[in-house]
Length: 207
Image (cartoon, rainbow, N blue to C red; front, top):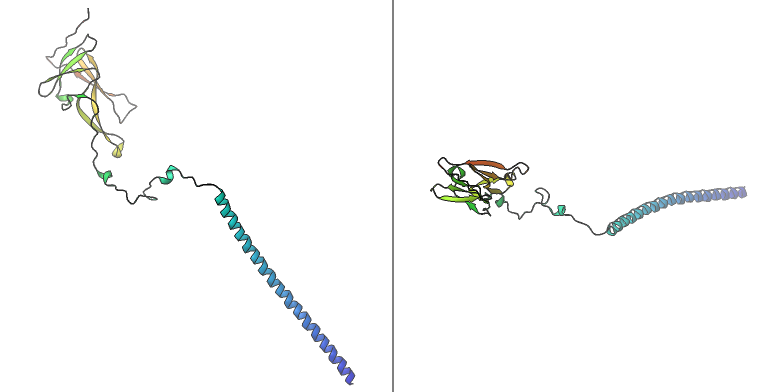
């Protein structure tokens, strides 16, 4: 009887050992899964870091950065110069002085009188009087009269001084022209100054 009990006890011991061994395998198997997942996550992080390094290297190998003039252009919103003064933008701009010789510069055309015309010669001439009744001889190509100021280019444009120019001297009148800078495609303005009543218009003929 005691022999059977011992045999049965050994069988139980062996069974318990076998069961413990199987449980260890399951734990080891489960641990293996854990290690496997951890290894896979580390591999993904290493791949991401490698991609970042390759992207940085590609950016360095792309060459020097090239800037254009537009990158340095001042814009009121994006890159306005904080040290720039805008006081000059609100100052009234004076017209530039005329760079040409002008006859009767202080007399308007309406105040002049055409009193004499000489034609039939190589260079026709005419005589104008100012407000003081002083005579002035003019020729073709001369600029005469008080300048007129014209604003060009809108509100931000520079004022320009304009003078009438002697275009032709005819037996009974003088033809004046003036370029219009606000309309360069249009023909110049024309004004005819007739001979004053009582004036002389002699004609000379070459022999």
